[in-house]
Amino acid sequence: MLRRFFTYYMPHKKLFLLDFSSAVFVAVLELGFPLAVQWFIDALLPNSDWPAIVSVSIGLLLLYIFSTFLQYVVNYWGHKLGINIETDMRQQLFQHVQKQSFKFFDNTKTGHIMSRITNDLFDIGELAHHGPEDLFIAVMTFVGAFWIMLSINVQLALVTIFIVPFLVWIIVFSNIRMNRAWQQMYSEIADVNGRVEDSVSGVRVVQSFTNEEYEIGRFKKNNRKFRKAKLLGYKTMAFSSSGIYMMTRVMTLAVLVFGAWLSFNNRLSYGELVGFVLYVNILFKPVEKIAAILELYPKGMAGFKRFTELIDVEPDVKDAKDAIEVGTLRGDIQFSDVSFSYDHSKPVLEGIDLSIRAGETVAFVGPSGAGKTTICSLIPRFYDVEAGSISIDGIDVRDMSKKSLRSQIGIVQQDVFLFTGTLKENIAYGMLDATDEQIEEAAKRAHLEKFIEGLPDGYETQIGERGLKLSGGQKQRIAIARMFLKNPPILILDEATSALDTETEMIIQNALNELAKNRTTLIIAHRLATIRNADRIVVVTEDGIAEQGGHDELIERGGIFANLHRVQFQR
Ligand code: ADP
Ligand code: MG
Image (cartoon, rainbow, N blue to C red):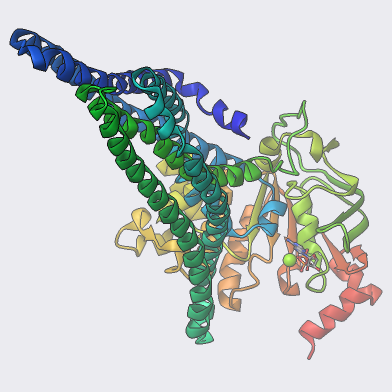
């Protein structure tokens, strides 16, 4: 895990070396300071050697100015290093999530993903900056200080070292507890995020059921759990820092008293006593520093662990090694003995055989939950088949690159997702580099023109989050305009007009008919009137494809379709 963490330093090697060497230099200077004081008191003061005092002071001053500059480097560039690593990881995670397949999103809460990408990485930057650097300096300072202390007075040094095991105990003990607390905290904040995401995107449902109090109650529960976890972390932190504080002060006093006694017996000079007391404080600094790292470490590592968990999720739909970049497809679609299930238990499709000719319009009808949407989701590989195969123009879709395959398929669904931004941007989502003319042309063909002309800001009109200010029919037309821009040879209309009133549906239907021209079109429809013109109708039931044929042919046959038709048209 640690090794993996360090790989993230590689792109920032120079920054790391700059920061690290500056920090080491500052530490060395700190280590030398008590020696200088000791020498000052014992050698320079008694002789009243004024010129020497002045020149030594000037030398020290210059060193300190340099060291101040280096401290600036450590504080600014060191943190820059940390932040760079943090943003690298965040970027990587976002990219990784974008590549995940539908199954991943079916099984992962949006709030949890958001949490991973934002909060979980907050402490990584600090750890990345302080971790290795402080650890090295702490060890170096500790060893250096103790070595100098031994050389000043062995007995006094041994008295000092006596306290160290107690310190270590406090640190290790609290570290374990903190580790647990921070992991818990991250998991709780993910739940809090999940709640926020749910109740905000579902706010219309919440309010129409007047379930605000219920939601508030649920949120409170999660929020409290978060508070508890974080509080436990801080409690442990407070315990450990108080403990460390007390030990260091007691130790300083002990050294002072024992040192005084040694000094009365002429075994220690005043300069040595002062120097020693200064070293005691220097000796404890690295211990405190290590404690601080140990505090930072579990926090950062808890986040890093959650980061790697997500990074290690391989998308289950991905490009084959030598995936084919298909150009423009004709649109001959062939399902051969296709079986599929969402969770490997209950099969949704079993042994589906179906061929669709290029340019054909095929309508899928049947009860809801039968698997119509599922059939269509398999073509662009939103999910991969479990058995059998799907090919387009004779090439298995699994051999094509996802990007080139999906560029050939357009999908219009019942729910149209609009992004925050302008109307123009939303239409251009079908072709990111579309010119203004192309966008206007697409809007015209989608019968959006009049609507857009009526808007004060026209194409630049801002669409609220999820386009709430637009009606279903308007959103649907934006989706159609996107398709005109994308211009794919294969088109899937999944209940595109099901949510619309009959009048709006007629207008949209015209636009859709225009869109479907010269494309292989798969229409899933609820209302049978919308599929009258289909070349072929495929009736899907829970047992698979029950019957297929032309509209009149199926009515004559008197099967399931004829039944559905009777129910819808002759009450
Ligand atoms: P239709 O479009 O004909 O109404 P679907 O293809 O949406 O039917 O669904 C077929 C079956 O698969 C249903 O039983 C449905 O519950 C299930 N299903 C659909 N989508 C998912 C999913 N993302 N995860 C798990 N099960 C699903
Ligand atoms: Mg469906």
